[in-house]
Length: 377
Image (cartoon, rainbow, N blue to C red):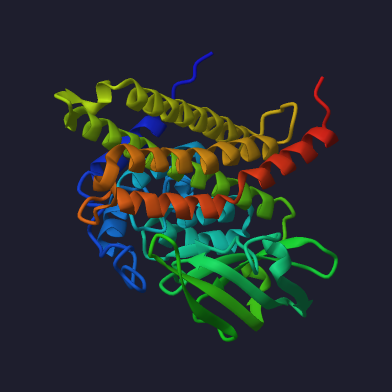
């Protein structure tokens, strides 16, 4: 079997590396030293470079000016973005573009997809629900009134909500069906309450009070919300993998230069064993990530639905990224806590990713439910 990526996917990685090569993780104030957000906006200059390199239009069909690539390509670019802590809504924009591409009405696709690909329309995604511990679609009620939909409820921890142009959010109908609505940030009835993420970025609680959206701006396909959720989760796992790989590289570089008793500490067995364990974590994160990305891209048959592969990827990503940064802090000693060194930023971002993915125990329970519903063998 051939497990290599396609030429188009590899080209996307090379383009991403070229763009991200000039990004400094220390370009904003440290989250450890800043009482509020580290910046009011995301990195607009980087966003423009991504647009110019056609990286924002990767998942968009060629008829709308994109490359027509798949979630695997998006995950490959996200992996590179996390290595430099790129402060852009690439995950949210890419996930929204894929969802709109696959499920939105023709008129809406023609209206928004070219602008998303050009970087002129910024779309974020709400997926945490009211508290972060419940199905997100249950946090907002959606009812039809004539040709429009009326939305009431709230979504918490929406990334970049204050500076995005549109918010793609889930809601549920009185019949219990999930729908998606593309809501302008400045729409009447929309209120944003400031929140700050663990990594120091601006989030918001988005409250909707009788917000009216047209049928054109609403996606009612029952598969759309699950697809969006799977891509968003898999993309988050890709961010965790890229961040973990960069942190392990930083640790390797530091321990190979830091000497004790006349020898690099990397040559000590206790250090080497811990680093090896984290390398194994990263390879497991990588294998489960690409398995999940492949399942949601191809919809290939398997012993479990794609949600099972996504759950396994989430388990490894949430646990693995935490272990990698904790070991890195330990092996760096006091130097790892120095705010003049960027490791503490990676630690904060890793914690934010872990919180976004949720506890591994919850995903293990979900996987158990899937195994019970789909007995193997």
